[in-house]
Length: 206
Image (cartoon, rainbow, N blue to C red):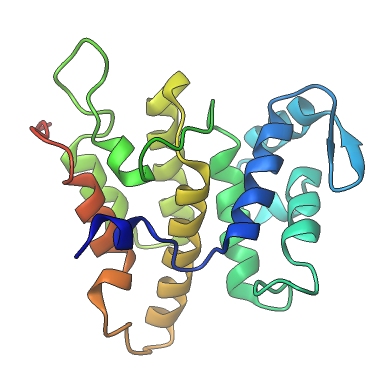
């Protein structure tokens, strides 16, 4: 399986990625334009971070303005699709804790990178396996927030994170309805993220 295939998004298109990147950039600034409006991005980010439950994210302005832009009439994502709405809520919550958008590698690869000046990974193999084994979307979000915080000023690949979350929420709903999984294992989140995580050398043990 080629590295370029693993890096390719499953759910999000290039136009989605640009919107998400622009939205995240807006959150880092006190006054910034986005989709025809002007917002205090840092205030929106603070409101998202203060949210304590996943379902409360949909009440935050930071979520609403991203939804209205991402789910337009020409998009393959739909506000009528509860899976897309829940995935976006999860992504919005997790992304608000990221310090920077770093596109140098896929998100899961960044988790196994070494902390500067040390031998340990940003996220140990044990914690990575716990993340993949999350039983609910709420638990998945909370463990992702912890992982994103561990990256600190190094940031994360925002669009890669978003695509992974959309894929995970879609798979979770399929399991709840006892639907069959995608027959291509390389289009499953656990396989894709595991391959990305293991693509770095000398992964530490916790």
